[in-house]
Image 1: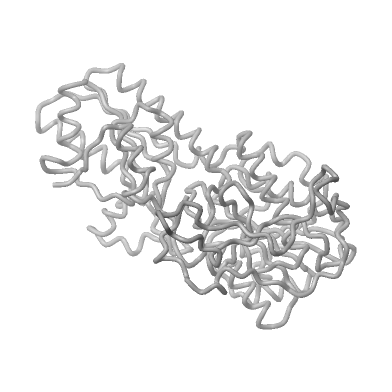
Image 2 (image 1 turned 90 degrees about the horizontal axis):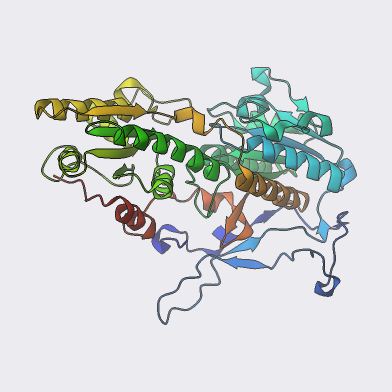
Length: 450
């Protein structure tokens, strides 16, 4: 994956990871210090992962824009026997959250042997004592079986809280390391806590674990839960295809999650090979006109007698822009695409049915909305492995005193991504790049323009 250079801060400081201070405590992990030992080694602080590996002819390697490589350090910042950690989950649900919680607890208690771990309930509200949600102790018994369940054992919520109040709650409970599991909005909250701790001189390691089934966190090649979500989305598409080919002029319409980015819709379309039109928020489309979606479906019914359409929920933004819709926002300020006026699925269903009724062409349309089903299931095997890896690298980062940082994976290597950098741009489908080209080649769809 490559970036768009113009969108990335050019200052080398933007790529520099913040540290709480000199690491003087020997790591209790007991790893090898030489390659000849044949077991994993500690990772030096100067190990880097290049951001760009694909270069134009004659272009020099840009070593300034590189990530600090994640991994266990030979010396750490915190004395494990005096260290307490906190974990908080915020934002929407996603397969694998409980896996991350469990692996964090096990690694911190078993490997680093820290003093204890607290779980803060219901997102950032649990870090605000005014809300009255007492944290819970997270030991081996509490997390023993949680990885087999979907959702989050800690609960979640949306909305902002005052960084000062959240930091007060952490200081009062003696928390040295805070692990924040969430998407871009949650990472903004983590960044605010890290900034407040720095301003007040509080030695708190704030480490984010990026979580979103939309896979839209920048400088990360994949977020956990995405693989599971795509697999579940494909099940819905397969059902829609079965319905479509079993009826006269059958149309299967599937609405999938994807608020700002259409990665689930795009990848599920590629996995299916039975989708004839895929609509995502990043690529404008029109229903009407000679080159619109409805005319395309009309031709498809005439030539093939069935069709499958996949649409990402964020395509409802076009409805919001046409109707206003400013009042349809959640506590985090995101448009509520499940709101009636902005729900693209029923809107599209009605438009297709009305079009063919006007043309006096009988169709059988089946609308499938798996919606929250794809995010409420347990992680599949691939995501379970990924969650465990993210958790372990997060534990290593925090114990080494890294702060205001997010654990990423880039070019198959795990990295430390400064939160300021991660929040500086958006990750979206680029209609001019390989992924969207693959979608259009697989579906055979044209550009849906007037």
